[in-house]
Image 1 (tube, rainbow, N blue to C red):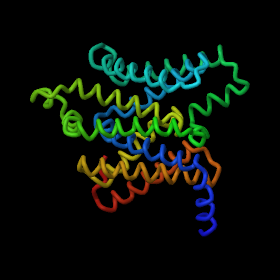
Image 2: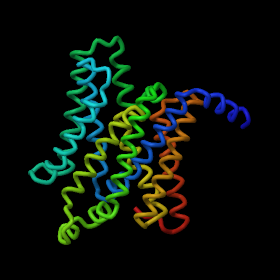
Image 3: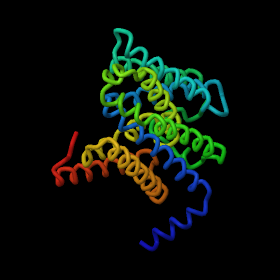
Image 4: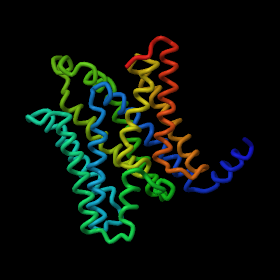
Length: 284
């Protein structure tokens, strides 16, 4: 135990470790706040669909040889979130079908572009790193950390400021419309905010594992708590703890960051499920 603590203190002296932990905590917090709403609205896989869009956008940025791919990736992902919401609500292509179309299409086009135009000597490695996460979380610059912090504060502020409206739209959208709440506007706010979180999380867990960051803390908290506020608070705390543990285990053990964080979240889910059954209130 002493050796582990000494090793952690040794690594703490390096800025990249502090940057990784800061970004991991911020992304985990934002993901968990939105996760509760998405799970309750039965729209959990919007994160999965948008993460594949982000992969496609990053492929385009790579082909264009952009040094900073975040602006392009963020722009395309936000536009896709808006289109996804509109497509799911106002056409014959509804929710899950629209997500599947955008998800598979973006993934295929992104991989095709990387194959056709990439000049990388290790294409398969680049694709694998983008899909499953890589060591990029450990090579963050101070500018990237501040950008992540700014966007995370914006996401958290949106959730806090519109908490009551988001709560209403989450539980009874029809009633919200009946009492004058502009449900479509708040659904749009949720979708755009999710898009921002997805882009932020790409460097942490990779595009294929982002949904785990959104879903697992929420469903774990729901195993023990039934109140929306309690579930949200528990989900946020659990997500942050899992992210910190995952990053530390990854650094100490040399394991992939994204996969390790997801593995910790799975362990937490199993633990909370057991506690929920023991308490007699393990909800769904």
